[in-house]
Length: 297
Image (cartoon, rainbow, N blue to C red; front, side, top):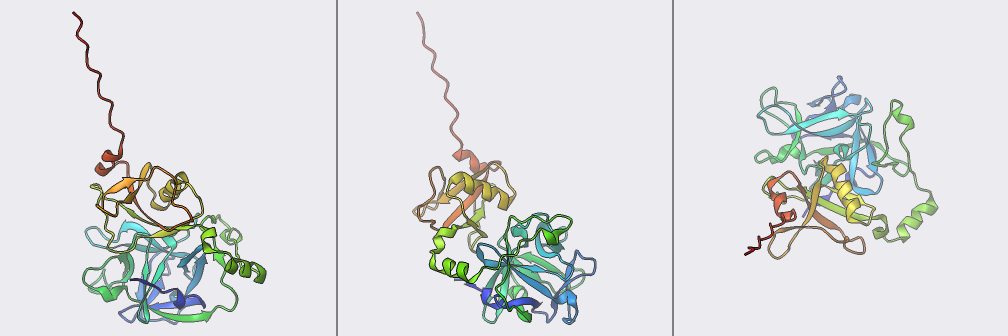
């Protein structure tokens, strides 16, 4: 069972992250690359912690250049496992810049929206000192990070909405939300289910198979209908014309959701099936059969 590592970050305004190789997660001077460096004293090794409105399990990490630690769905190098990790400043704050801390003793793993983990690589150049995200099969220690709090947060942490957009003057577009004492007590008194429901999702491959050995990425859905869920999943995955499915607990088979969502904002685990994959064919309506010809004498 995975345990949240949010406690490492809740009181932190900024942190340093130290890898298994005794090197620090560092923002390169090119303002795009991310690497490991033994020097943890520079500002490039300091990351500002941001929290996401309505989602208690994830954080954002911003470099000294004002850019976010970002997990891209691109190969790090052709033929090499692992996906790119960069600094970026997307116009829309989405889940590609969100990291879910998972506690592992006194260290954390940082999980991406793809279900991968932030990984500090070793070995020979160009692999050495690089940063990727994937699920390691051999070097499991390479995804463990020590959290060194640089600055302590004094006030309530500001929360940044996923819907916030970043224009040219991005600092003026970010909405800081520090709840008042009155509103904080109201939030504590009201049940969490009124805020929405948690959606955990997986994306099926061409044959409809899902690797659910690890918990999938998640988000908070504030809507109540299947159409809203489908639209949100398309935004999260970048896919279009998807089929939202659930898994039959008895036989393990997938079936498309057609009706209303479960009541009381219950947490849901769903599978996203792209309409272009072979597995989607069985969910499509059957083609009409041709009518039989009547023989006339």
